[in-house]
Length: 228
Image 1 (spheres, rainbow, N blue to C red):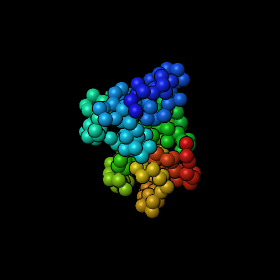
Image 2 (cartoon, rainbow, N blue to C red):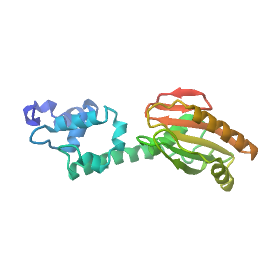
Image 3 (cartoon, rainbow, N blue to C red):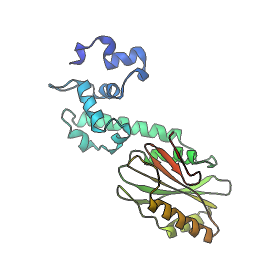
Image 4 (spheres, one colour):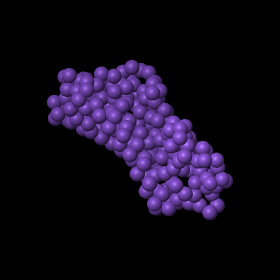
């Protein structure tokens, strides 16, 4: 069915103007960005095909490149650029809300808010370290590794050298799980234990290891899974 065949109150753009963004589905919002469909499919059909492409998980749009989008029938460079720009604006909006550099980091949720913009939607694992001063304020952030889909390699010597170099008193390790499950693997547990012991040997404290996914986060310090 073509957009013009719909009642005006059900057309995405008119529906947004009359009822606000909250009244629209993900597909309808994407249809507004796409603006037009193809000869064989309406813009709503095209938008729904995109939603199906990511299995209904908007977080997975971050994995789609311009080439990925352009490979979808009905989406050319202009539409692809519009979608990528919209996703990037959304990411920057969240990052702006999460500007917590001057606040004491005293809870895993603060770590989650700070690091989510950097890690959300990645198709690979990344490991980061946050270095804090005596007042629990962030003094330095460093990406330690960027690996495959199942694990990253952490070099404790690099972490400790960075911590000592920036006069940090404590460390928080952070990494993501692309599979949407934030629960720690045996390798995560072992790497946390090793870093805890290594930090203690040079009078530093490993405060926490937070694992972030699109389905929540896990805190070793709290030993709990949270679903924000």
